Length: 127
Image (cartoon, rainbow, N blue to C red):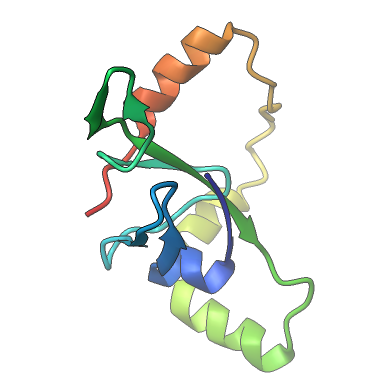
């Protein structure tokens, strides 16, 4: 499942309902302290597809989150964000002119099975 969420939802937590393939309405929520990153995958046990030949047993449902960032912020919003999230110690590290090294992002170069294995290791179980 893919789910678009707002920046606020990514930081403050989410709770949403969806209609499962079997017709029941299911509610999914994150723990209060969980922050969701853009492109993060979470899994919910026993809400996935039924196992072949055992329709009473279900696999895991994987949810891929896309965080929608605001296009602009007002001056008041920028001030609120800075007061809420700003860390002066991190700014000193981030703005250090002696740091010259850059890291480039790379696309995943493995097989689909390797990627699925890595995703399973990364997944967070929702309650």
